[in-house]
Image (cartoon, rainbow, N blue to C red):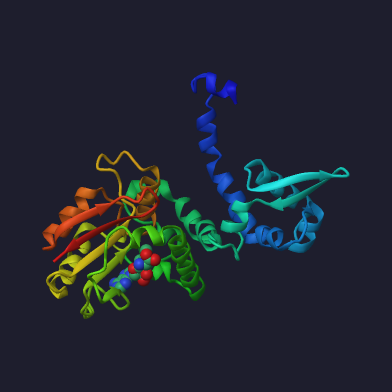
Length: 302
Ligand SMILES: C[S@@+](CC[C@H](N)C(=O)[O-])C[C@H]1O[C@@H](n2cnc3c(N)ncnc32)[C@H](O)[C@@H]1O
């Protein structure tokens, strides 16, 4: 490690190679989730050998052993030697976040990333070239039918809902406590078609990870519709991963923005774009709160 630090990236591209391997590391974790490795190790009363794990998961011993060793390598599993046999067990992080039954399980997020986001990102270069999502190439669905692609089967719909729910486990508390919402009695999170259908009356409209799916024109259409139905003193709460004003980070929001390119019609935006769209729709008193985690909150009033 000390050697790594003392050498320049130009002498040997350690960092670059780490980035190259990023997808392999992701796939190691995702595949272990898919196979049920964390569920097995979390519920097992004792540490298990690769052979025992392989037998329970109906997998090859050789493949299982390599996968378990890589998980130890990235510090997601523990290993101890007993009479020359390697015995694997779960770390706390794996039990809490990667097992299906974990207290803050991100298991569904891992599955969605692996099975839906990963194939889309395989076409990232084309998305950049064309400036539009890759739903047609990846799933055979026209690019303008963003949610028809996301909900293309019952199984996909459930997986997407699992993804959405699992990220609330991480960020839900911070975004709903970002502002004092005491004054709002009725809160609406949309069900029907918010671009065309009738919108229900409420004090507060929550648009969580909605605007990032759409072009500025569509965002303005939606915000203006909400403004028109919103009572004076009522408001709109946006939940989004905000870019820095300079757009030079956070890296997670920059990557999410590419995800919106590859999967949807929208983008992640810096504060001024949200403030601008809200004001142009009629809203005032725009307040922004960066949570320091994945999702931030923006509140505006009519
Ligand atoms: C990225 S998800 C966010 C879901 C949820 N608000 C959350 O943060 O967990 C975007 C949501 O917009 C919904 N949606 C897309 N088009 C819509 C429309 N025309 N009318 C109402 N909802 C729509 C989708 O069904 C999906 O649930």
